[in-house]
Image (cartoon, rainbow, N blue to C red):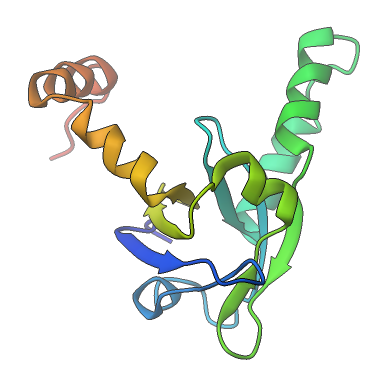
Length: 152
C-alpha cells in the first residue's frame, strides 16, 4: 500500500454510526471490513485497518514494561481502542465513549494519515487550518522534511 489520501465528510447518525465514503472505501484492501478505532493525539479519533493496527501492536509489545512512561503510554494509547466493522450498508458504529472524547458534533471529517484515517469533528478540523498560517506551514515543512533525502 502506498498510503491513504484525501479528506472525506460524513455525518454521525442518532445511533452513533457514520457512512464510510465510497472514495475512501476504494482505497482499502479488498475485503477490508474490520478496523480498530482509538483515541488520537489531538482530540480526534483514529481509524486503523486491522493490518496497520497489528504493526503498531507489534512495536508496542516490544516496549519495556518496567518503565512507568511505557505503562502510561499504553494506557493512554490502547485504552478505549475498539474493534469495529462495516455493516451491510457500509456504516461504522463509533463507541459512545470515543464519540464523547472527540466528536461533540454530528458532522465529521475523515482525514488520511498514511496507513490510517483520523476522524475529526468537522468544526475542529476546519479550525486547525484557519489557525495555521501559510508561513507556519512552510516553516514546519522545512523542519520536518529536512532530514529526508531527495530520490532521483
